Image (cartoon, rainbow, N blue to C red; front, side, top):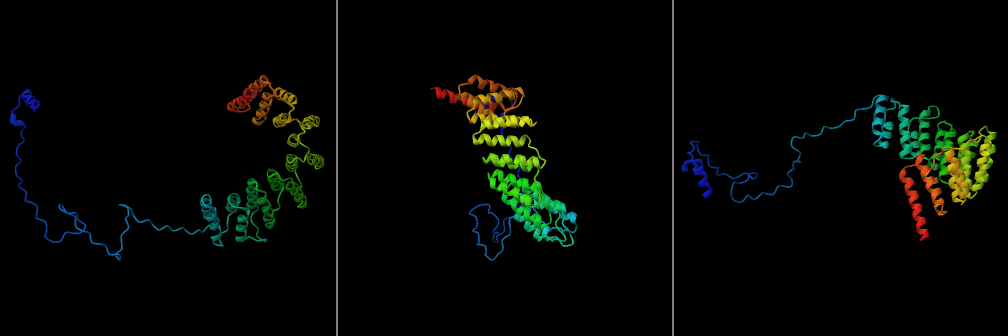
Length: 381
């Protein structure tokens, strides 16, 4: 309080200047008294306890709580499809979210509206990718196609391509009768995809069965067919059986290439005949077929796994002279074999070449070398 008086004296103001003036009475009429009747149930009293709510009758309908200012949603009505272009656009808009709904659009279209070939190809491709060949077959059976009016060939080829990309041998096996029912003859591409699927499943008998089926259906094997056959048989350890098809390839006008020889070398290394694979390299060169990076990496890894480290070093020197790159698996196997043999300087040399040739990321090079050196240190402890 002393501070306030001191401030007043400093400002030299009269003491009554801080006293508020009394307000003058208002001339407006007082508000009318509240009515004496009963208060509505939805109003809140100004004082006292709130009135007791009366229970709502169960038969009275309750209004939905809609957001303020929201209008009722308009009833969505699908426009009827009257032209093939509209049908194609509707299928293209629906197929990404629900392929079954897109297929139902094709089935429910009026008979006077033909299904465009590109729409059928899109449906068959998606069904083969996300469902099965049986689903595509059922769609073709439900559509108005017959022997007199078969399904468009481009659509069936799209189905075959999607099924081959999927790589399931059972699905590709079911594809062949579907194509035959619609007058489309499977070509070597379809049979090669079926053969590759059996190779991935490590089924050499299935691989040979596809070759027999091709010949029975009158389809001539091509170079991809023979290379896939050699690869599948050699991978399964049937190297002698695989080598018998080299003459059959030449008789059919398909001479063995670098893929053929590399597949045979891989099979021989897996079977334990790495020196035989090395002799096959000389035979390959003598026939005018130059090896590539994959051939040398296959040999390098096979020789290391068969404990032929000196021969592996010779192959590595040839790769350095030809400026070939090392594959990460071959590099890891070679580094590990050198460290286990105590040839650490040679391992560092391989590491330097891998970094110089940019064969793989630096992380891979450092990781493999470090893990091999750690193993060597633990072995010496």
